[in-house]
Length: 293
Image (tube, rainbow, N blue to C red):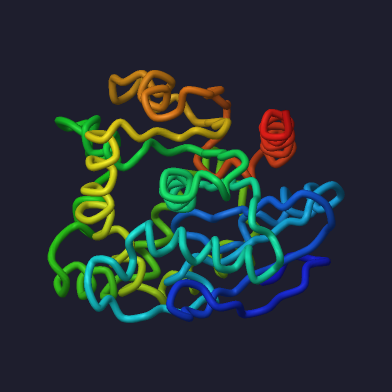
């Protein structure tokens, strides 16, 4: 499954990890990072529209899609720091030292880490439907935390989670596509099958990505919070109103990380870039204007 009008290439990420990248357009660069359980293909509607005004760079994260899936030699392999370095390496290979960065879900966590570690490279940061790692774990309490049951499963030591998921992999991954799609019409059968098949082929690396979020990524976020480091670029967050269900104020949580913040709620499901692409294009256009100001 490829984005119409985009050219594809494998480019070296951190330590030479091969990253599958789709590129099109001309102008200021914007990188779009996908979430779970998806691939770069989730951006197809948004990316084609943005390519009329931007150079649009759409990678598969390491461990997903057609990018390499290195065995986890340790927690760093799938840390968001390593994945952020993949993004910087790919952008530089394409001639861009600075770029806008917009991520959904897992990709947004990579974007946050890129913004904290490499503020000079990230002109603006867009976040779709997620909280920072440190805050995610803090707000998941009591029975309402069952909405994020998969985070706890994949946080367990290597071995058992991978075996359990592999045993029912198509059902496991399809359950999220079904549960987080508001009306069941967001995905074509072909797109849905693509996401499921891609995820089934990446169980070990997906689990390693999530395990990092319960370990090394959390430690990095805590170190930044303790040191008072924040995101210095314009940040835009667009999200469902999870706070009303779980009892938190998302704008306040994000504001502690991002002094230059805009926050908006959207009437859409988790897969908003596919459900309401026009709204996401407007969100990114407004954010890019702030980044250029």
